[in-house]
Length: 151
Image (cartoon, rainbow, N blue to C red; front, side, top):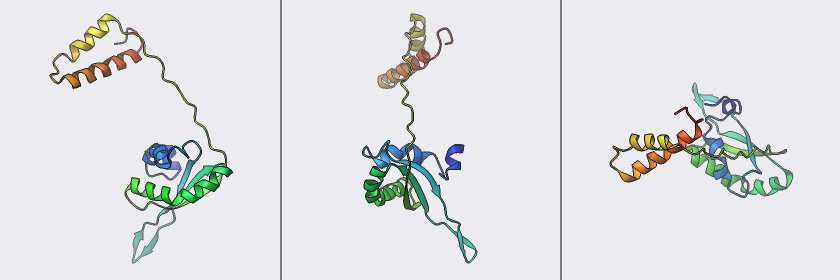
């Protein structure tokens, strides 16, 4: 588990990774998960009982108004995604959403004839043409990302 996910109370980073699909296009980039607040477990007959957590989300004031009405559906989608009733409540906190920088991948360098032939030789024994093509494409991408002469 990633330390940031653990610090924020998320059992795994899966929820954070799936967040854009869970909230949809309307709220992606406008609503950000803050943290999960797990209640203290209560014991009945000495057995701990797991209670659902409260999910804190951050958004601006205008979005908060609309999002609050759709929070129950999001809670159901999150619980279905996780496979159990992990989130019992969503609490909306009005504060700015941190924008992540959009990075564009570096362009791939051109491969030399020797590099192309070496990759083709490595996959030459693969009988399935689709698999062979996919492996060749993968190999070329991997080699193209490395500095020239390091293959």
